[in-house]
Amino acid sequence: MLSQPKSGMAQAIQLPPDQQNLKSHPKLTFEKNGYAYTIERQGDLSIYTVRDGAGELSLPIQYAFGVHMQTFVFQYRSRFYESMVSYYTKLRGLAITLGDEQLRPRNLVEAMGREMSREEVVVCFGCHSTGGVNQGRLTLDTLKPGVACEHCHTGAAAHMEAIAQGKAAPFPAKLGHMGAEDMSNFCGQCHRTWEFVVRKREWGEVNVRFAPYRLANSQCFLGDDKRIRCTACHDPHGSLAGDEAGYDRACLACHASKPRKPCPVSKNNCAGCHMPKVTLSDGHVAFTDHQIRIARPGDPYPN
Image (cartoon, rainbow, N blue to C red; front, top):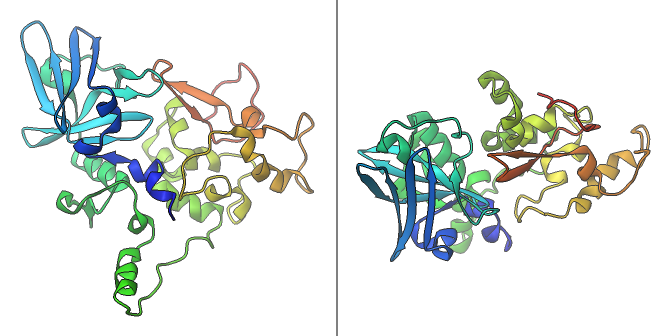
């Protein structure tokens, strides 16, 4: 798929030479909780610096995770840290990383970022890269930035290599046969399944980020129905479509005919009404809530 390398998933991690947001903004600054942050481009690297009244700490940014909201990961004393500040496209600048708003750092190391557990590191690199994790262990020497074919289609690399050499090779397993529940669990390996969210008790508006969980809570979610699976709306090989009206076809695949009731209000812009936006991180980033419902103004956020 020619569109896939340009998609958001394909750019889920950027290495220093390809960190486009930081290249486009060679000096970024931010202040919070008595600490001053600077990210400054120096050659092919971006240097992340945090200062207080007594000193400073500087580290090169090794990995930039995400696209529209980009969080940085680096190593300090052989430990991985998630940056306390992230780049937000809406701001064209820095703000506190989503989920860290309530943290109050007590020193430069804590102000620099949040130390990541081993499990968290494995999960992050396992989802955002291809080849960065093997059998539950970090293999950063074989990391390929972003989600490539092999990440979802196990055996794709061996298949392509064999074909290039004129040899026969088994095809990777096809994913198109999956129903809604199977696909939700498959995509949820990274985007979080219903089971994961319930087990971890990730309650409140922050779980709007976990689309498979939210979708599974919808009344119209039927586990064996392909019309409500992830790929009914989203092309996994392309960039996310920003036009809400473009998703009407998926809604009308069910609601334009019996036994599903048609909407009495409109047949246009379904997502705009039934999948409301939820704003997080002090208004810097908004997520579409995939729990499809009749959303009335003033209703509490449904878990």
